[in-house]
Image (cartoon, rainbow, N blue to C red; front, side, top):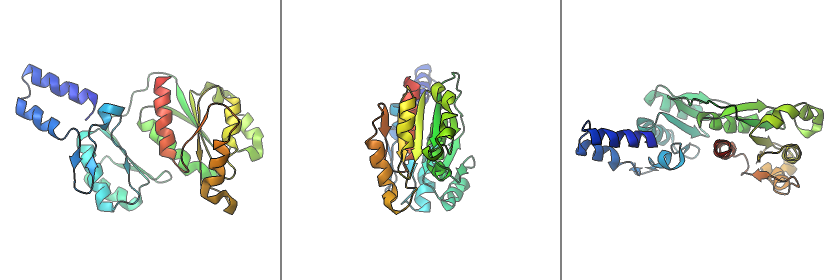
Length: 250
């Protein structure tokens, strides 16, 4: 339930179109709904502007399908991250509008696509093609949350002329998300070029000394470029959500 739904419910009660009992029934499970194995935060959309996002990894197929079904009963748009194909198929059987983004491993239900009326956009970049799954998680998260997104992939510092060719779109962007593995240097270079927030996502892409993304994480944390923030390793969702919040505030 989002702020508009609460407002409409109160107006319906005020005008007599909804009884006190009907209003109370809808408000009863508004704070959260207890499923036993999960307590669904139905108040999240009112507080933060988007419903609770389901982290699917580690949950059973049945749990994921049930949680998303209950969220979809009260929200037009729902997002599930780190989801498998089997999880999606179980959700699809319950919510026909569900779709699956294989590369990003996202389950999306988008009954009311956001109407974007301004030219501001989030730029999502990758150092390499191998970073695309994490970048797509960020990009699709930002899009379902009502942001215009542009993508520039495979512009790592090993061929820096590829990055320099993107100077115009970097200057036009409102917020930038950079996903990079190996040594993670792309975030610092972009941070040195851009006069706007850069959210860097270290990825677990790389050979042994990358330590599953730790090398890229440390590089990004030690960036000498001002205005570079860092989310956790492979946390494309976190980057997309933060970029969305910054984009709407700026």
